[in-house]
Image (cartoon, rainbow, N blue to C red):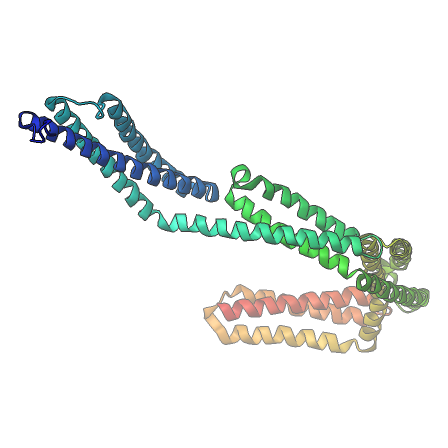
Length: 408
């Protein structure tokens, strides 16, 4: 400051210097406040976004750490705001007050700068998590655009379809339901849910468009499948017509015990064939109405019933084949079973004292059971089915013994 003559006011030089220093300190603390406020807001947004994306223990730990740091930052900011109201540096303060103001602003600047450094360090430690959030947000932005485009294309394809597009409409409904979640955004459902919803919209809308565009090919495929299943039903029907003759042969050639369990199979087969033809009629009606999902479901039911009918027929014809083969050469299965037991006995003798000696009695018992079957086969009209099952069980038990001996 100068006098009216332009010379310095030497008598208040110290006061002027103190006031200038206070104002400089106030500018420095204001800059520190602005810097902390900026980084605090940015970091807070990143923490919130990460917590929305990763709702778990890691996000909870990060939120707790940030809450402590944020409280300290808020306290430093409150100290600064209180200080700005305590000293009016636009006034011509006396030297002691100016020096007091300078010291207070320097102290607040140091606190603001220190907490700024801690927030910056925190952001650095969480850089990987925050990068994950940014990548997810980028995916979400891209997903929103793709979802909107795919929805529009799906709606257009369904409108252009020749006739009703039931499956396409269902897929479009699923896409639109996911779009509702997407429209709520990360704030309502979390970032992860929003990203997943965008992907779901794209998938379902793409499926809806494809289904609508391929309707002619789908109808043709249903027609071809219907024709093939009809042909199979006719073939099985013809096959069932031979079953009475098969049962007659069984009754004439073998004792009742050998085939009693399959006598009801023809009736069951006819019942399944009737169910298959009924399902085929339903499929034809649904195909004519162009309701392809229902037509496919009815075709699947017809196939299941035809499989069951064929299984019942196989039980009858297979039983006759098995019994005739056994009756034609009774000695072969007996010899094969004796050989299996003897092989197990030879292995037992080879292993000697290294194995459980109780296997000897078990194998001797198996050989005696073979002798019993051989004697029963010499009787008139033996129960071939029971005796063949007995031999199968003996061979299976011999194989188990062999496996245990080799593992001992």
